[in-house]
Image 1 (cartoon, rainbow, N blue to C red):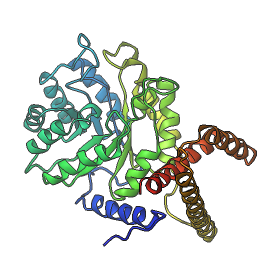
Image 2: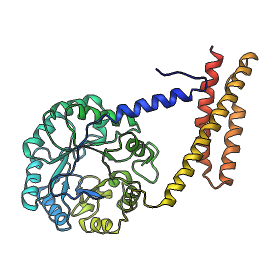
Image 3: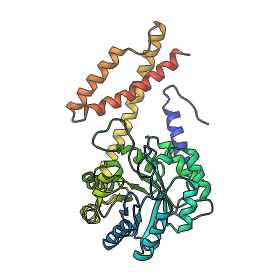
Image 4: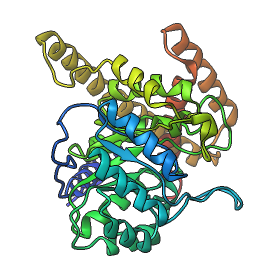
Length: 378
């Protein structure tokens, strides 16, 4: 039984706990295949698209010589507009089989339909992934899940094109419900109309929340699609490692400038090897008593923040009562703008980004308005 108090804090906490428990029910097993070391980062590399047999084999041989164990190549390529290269189709699967035979590498590709799944299983593909456009469509994900019933194969699920964590988790749940336990997530960033530095905005807080919700789910970063430019691949790989990601899926082509798709974001096997050798892999476990003490301070600060927020909401409800008694509207635009500007400036003086502070107070104001609306509509 959930008891709702006026400040709404308890119901929020209880619902959040229920949500966590529900999402932690995924039955998961390791995605590592025989011969793959259990260390960070797990690396999956290869061209965006399988273009020709020569291109696939040349890239695979170079990657294998650099010690890569898992090869990737798109066989079917969903394009934003018609007329672009949409993949070689089933013919390319025979090239992946040859990669596996000659180099001993595991091979992986993207699937978007049940037919893709059947063709990949028939060709002996080792790892499948579900693309961002497909993840955004529950009907398509369910079709793939149904096609995979009774199959034991690692399946990686990219985040949907839009920043919707529940949709991402829902896709993982659909495949897990079909009996597949070797699941992982791929973070490839989120599409945005307003293009700036990145092709797809990282919005790191979303995969971080996914990790909090499903702690034992491996998360792999796709720096190629996040960056959209090869010069951004290295720093994005390091960011992913600093955030504790389990692996990287990177587009590598024997001749990137001549690639038939996504040429700007692909790197040569030599450059990829250089990037990986420069990575700093930090420990993700506590190693000192000092860190423990600092975390206790963080916990204390968080507890104080929650208490102060609860106090602020009590005052906001009193204001709501006053507005109701005097027939005033809830939203006072002038006051709201004043709060945002003042708090943003205060935050900057304290060494914080003013836009960050504004976002915090936008969220606080939204909750204050919600609570005042409850009072006025009683």
